[in-house]
Amino acid sequence: MLKILLVEDDDILSDSILEILIESGEITQVYDGEEALYEAERGIYDVIILDLMLPKMSGEQVLSNLRKKNIYTPVLILTAKDGLEDKVNGFKNGGDDYLTKPFHRQELLMRVQALARRALGMNVKNELVIKELCVELDSHQVYYKDNEIILQGKEFDLLHYLMQNQGRIITKDQLFDRIWGFQSDTTLTVVEVYMSNLRKNLKPFGLDRWIKTLRNVGYLFEPLEESDNE
Image (cartoon, rainbow, N blue to C red; front, side, top):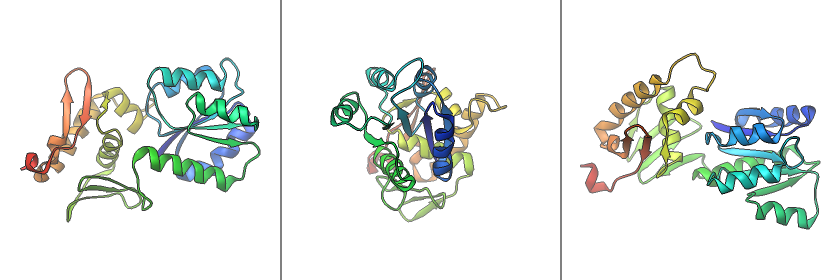
C-alpha cells in the first residue's frame, strides 16, 4: 500500500483529493509548508503531492530544502500556476511531475500511480521484482524462483519497504513510522521482533543474508549474487 503525503492548504480541496486517492494507500494531510517539510523529512512516504502556494513556507522552499537534504521522494506539484516559466521552475526545484488546477480526478490518480511505479521499481502488474525475488502488491504474495514464501501482514510490509529502498540505510524509527505509524501504541522493539520473524521465513532460501543489520544505525537490504546465497 502506498504512503502519500498530501500538502494542500485548502481544506475542501485537500479532502476532495483524499477521496480520489483513498483507495491507493494511506494519505497524510498537512496544510502548511513547515509541517510539510517536517513530515517529508521523515523519509517514509512514496509520493508527495505538493501545492506551491502555502502558508509559513512556500512549496518551492519545501521542495528545494528536501532536495538539498538528499531526500528524493517523488513530488507531484499541484498548483494554479500554469505558465511555462512556473512549470520550468517547478522542475528545476526538483519536482517530478506537474498538474495544474482544476484537474480531472482520473488524471491525478494516474499521475500519482505512475510516479509511484517508477520510483518504487514496480512493473505494470503492480509487482516489485529484485533478481528472482518477486513481491505481488495486489495479492500480498511473495515468490523466490518457483517457491512461494509465506509471510504474515507486517512481515510482508517490512520486506516490501526494504525492497523499495534497496541499497539505502533504513533506521528503526523509519520502519516503525512507516509500518506501524508514529501514533501506534506499541514500542520500537516490535521492529526487531518482526525483522527476526522475516529473516526466519527467508532463511530457507538464503535470502535472510540480503538483510544486513547496522548496529545502532538500522538495516540495509542488499541482494547477493546467486553463488553467495548457497
